[in-house]
Image (cartoon, rainbow, N blue to C red; front, side):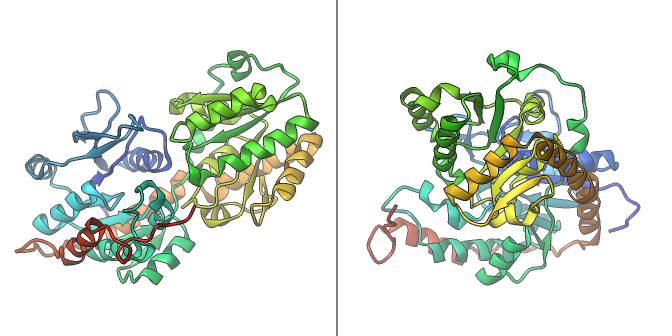
Length: 416
């Protein structure tokens, strides 16, 4: 591709704003900054902001337990017409599911270079497929490798994920490219006062968690930590921002436990309003050990709010101990409590980490830096040959067959 040309890019995703999650945020930010650099970016997704004529909205099946999510059922004809009209230089898929397969079809039919970002370690999310049809770990790894080997270039948000993919058998080129942080959005004047909104006294410290309310976020650990903190610090609040399958359990905890009266569960919050929670909280607490990247911890630092977190998976790759964050190596209740208590008692240290964290994000994790790298990757790709037949479905078909045969030899019934 000619480096002087303006690119037309089509992104395929199972999620997009206004949904609140890391993948939706990543796509939205890269789109925003690519457009700042003069490129045209389009999105194919099952959700979209109002009045966005650059998003092709795909209908789908709403998940009964999580109404905000849809399983998109793509129409080949609709997508083909869209591609004929746009004539993209590159397509970029963000999940190896229904729209990921739609992207593979477009890649083969039109000969368009295809980049895929492997956002999520799928082996960590098998528990969402109910027993007894929970797929074996090796089958998920096999599928991940198969999909990545169909595309032209793979993006991994962290070096650890890149290593995992190579272990699975991915042979395509893999570039480590995290999602950057939109630092400008954290420098605007406050829109409202979260203390006033939630009736929080000015002398209370605010701890914040932002994320999907789900098993893999280790929220039970955070609630245990807060229960202990509440015994020592009466003037303390925990704000939990997000929604998900654990919401009923958290609501039950709030109703039954003494510490629950100091916990605020907000549900989903729009992006512009979420920034105020980051900026006006005193400390961000995070104990997930399955993050691909963990954008929320970097966003907290960008807002000037220090972080206490467990240094596992993507968190280990994006945070440095002392650079706005205090980290523990394992899920250790005593060590986590010690870090949080240290910051609650030492105002000077808290303020110092606030300043250091903001600089750390600007210097190493800004969207400007990451978008320039993504643009160079796009420009390095060459147009691929148009396939005369459909892409190889043999491995995928074989796995579907495996998943459909319920039996001890095919599916592993995992212990909790």
